[in-house]
Image: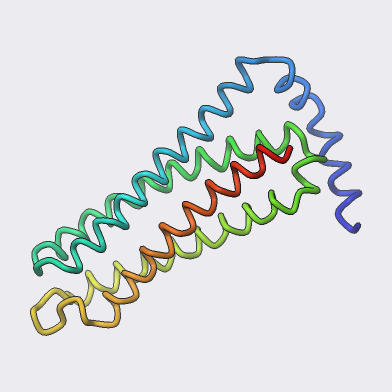
Length: 175
């Protein structure tokens, strides 16, 4: 395996952290709390925003206008939560580099996270185009292709957040 020397070097460098993590219930509990708390916060807000998207697309022009404002402010909070998830996830992975680094489930979860980030970027660009184009009139209602793309991106977001949680559960259960 090409990655074996890299994983060994990272495992060696992370040994002090791995020892602290495994020897301290407080440290391992805090890292796990921040990882799950970040997931609850960011994922919960994202899924709630995705749900609001579906609801607003069936609503009035005012509902869609308010949605775009709400989505714009939600992104910074979701990104803050993702930052916590990333930092705590890195600490979790460094606590047992050999196990996580060699796990296909871990790499599947990381791939899902990468897809989530790409989808979040797509969501944000669609929202910006909708705001810039003032596509809120009756003539463009939710039938406009950008609104359809926003709906697809919201559905993708919900699916990815769910799949990431599932992959995390499977990863914990398999290690």
